[in-house]
Image 1 (cartoon, rainbow, N blue to C red):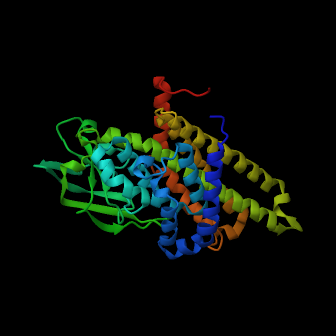
Image 2: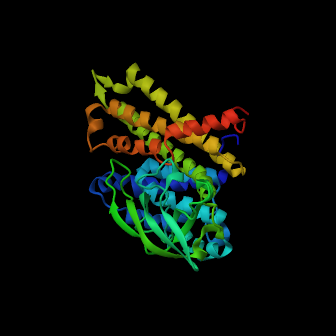
Image 3: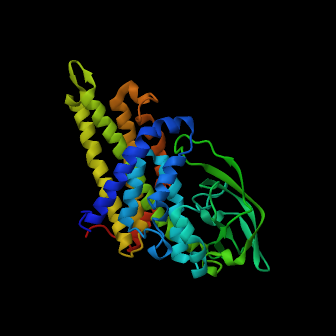
Length: 384
């Protein structure tokens, strides 16, 4: 990719920007502080087809390329990162169903998921297993033409709305851990025990899910074959890291925009603070790093569009972009001075939202290890 968006992608981006500026930016601060669920925004995203981002056109979705996929999360996160969560794990789940599901599963779920009539998420993390997914304890035991599932999942976005909820389970304890795991598409029977309180990433619910003797038809085994769950999930997480990288770029861009606007308007010692060299250096650093993060994210997305495995590329994009988001939100707060600490200005929300991208979808330390392993093994390389 030459890092120039094609005409279709440019038009798509303009549509997204207009939507974000009209429907999200004016209400984000008030709704986020009040804990209000963004129902009206979700409905508008349904109308735009955004719940069908990763659903193939034959099932009623957009079948978007990965660069366009990244554009969606960058633009929405620029307005309110929490709203991006309502279609984030949903899009990852629909990608997995489209990629790995049986034809019957695709026909049953994807058309309604594409319109938002159904919504979904992804249940991987447990109270005792986050980064180490092989350490999960949720068990699914075969009982005739059903599985009986027991376990607890946590940090699950969209859990209150999910039908189905893809759940990573152990279907065998005699096989090596990565070979004894499967994904079940659970329509009902699980319970949401609580919503987890969070520093940021508000607007969408993040829940603890309890599965107690939940009976799931064997026909809901993703792909129809046991033991492929880890492979299915890891492939999905590559796409998930492009999602997170794009969100980080959006948050960083919002922080930069707020900082630059404030620096031009705020005066000190008889002149705009943007005239001071110390402020100018901060602005220059942010602009350069944000553009680098954006190009790295688009590069990873374009590699995915080419059919490549992108664990290294997506890891690089997620790692770098999330660190840029952290820096940009803090520097924007510093440029605002005391006002940056006030809830009346957007930068305090950006400062609370940014850390999620450094933690979610695999911590940045994990990304560095993934990158290094790919390079040392010779499977990945840098340059052209």
